[in-house]
Every structure is written in structure tokens, then in C-alpha cells.
Amino acid sequence: MSANKLIRNPIHLYRYLLKECKKLPINAQDHYRHHLRQSFNSHLDETNPERIKQIMSRAIEDAEWIVKKYSKQPGI
Image 1 (tube, helix red, strand yellow):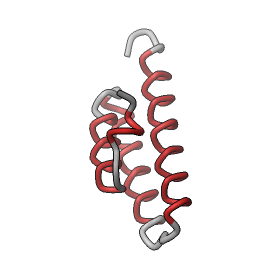
Image 2 (cartoon, helix red, strand yellow):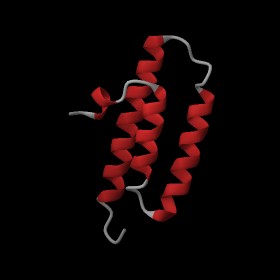
Image 3 (cartoon, one colour):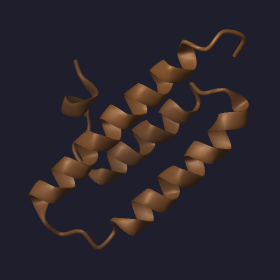
Image 4 (tube, one colour):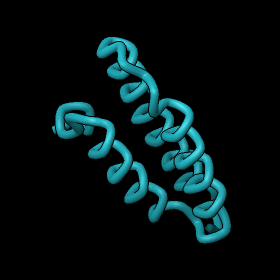
């Protein structure tokens, strides 16, 4: 089952993305956790359901790309 189907609201997304951060190298985790917090806070006032779905979908795609990027790097 894809992450998009499991994540029903922004709080689920936030928890999912925090778990994904744990898959990254230690030195990258702080950077991406900070970025995650900043992004979440910048979209707190969003009320349009379509826009929220779009943001959530993009966040999942970005997280998958970042995890894949770091998993391909040797020695990490």
C-alpha cells in the first residue's frame, strides 16, 4: 500500500515524515527535521482541501526521493 493511501491528514503526514527522517544518515537528519518543521509551520493556515492534498502528495514524493538519494550513496 502506498504512503499516499495511509496518510489521511497533515498530522499523519508529519509523523510519517519524521519516521522517514530516521532512515537518513545522522548528519542529515537534523537538517531535514528542521526543514520539515519549517514547512509544516508555513502551511498551518492553509484551508483549501485541494491545496492541502497537493502539498501532502508533494511532501511524500520529496521524502521518497530524499531517502532514495541517500540510500544510493556508498559509505553512508
